[in-house]
Length: 327
Image (spheres, rainbow, N blue to C red):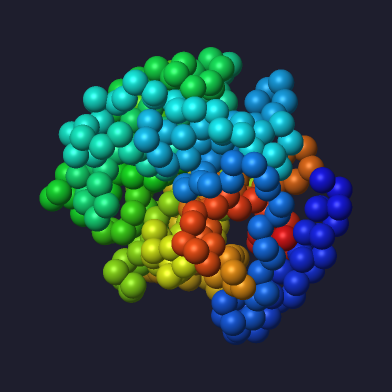
């Protein structure tokens, strides 16, 4: 692990220089030489990954898959298949998946002595979608209990209920961010005692008008005095032709307004690029962030030259202006 971190730290210097170039008007994709993913071994196939650190040590990773794919790791490097969250199927989600067992973009965290997982049910290109919540005391395969539907969108909605992410503020408020394409990324308040909606308000936090309005996969992370909105621009799920890239904006308030490094509102298409296609790493995206004992950690998927989806893990540093960079 130490040799890996030294290698990543050197790559981080490049990231800092790239950000500095960005401040003088050079786009990140043109200026940056982004670091390759850190070394991961074992079962590394993953799409829309999320990781939680277990209270007793080790990690649980959840990804898109039939019944939600689970993996475990003792050290954030070696990953082993750990079955499915719902091995017996999810009939309650069939109305949104067209009967498929495939569930999307789980968001796993540890809250109040149990693991919670928000996840989405939909079909590709449809806004007939729903986000559900499940819980488990161990996080192991087959131990997850579904707690029901949190929010749904319909074919007539101008937003899409997929890609959920739960953020707990320093003061203890719970907020769920979600969304994909259409009118962008949304946020609702969650009741901590139920895990479900606290009220009927829905906040608009990011939207694009270009590239088919492609913004999705939000993840809100608190650091210092800001909330950072990590998100994906452009197109996923095209193998080595994917153009996904990781963007970030920030706000002093969790509900926004979020602005990028140049001051552009996220609701006006703003976002500062921090990771994109480079070398043989194609379409990195669907970011998730957590704080570990050694650093803040970015988790994502990318595609190989052969078009396979793989787990990407890097570390996050913060520059003198409190903007994140990947190393």
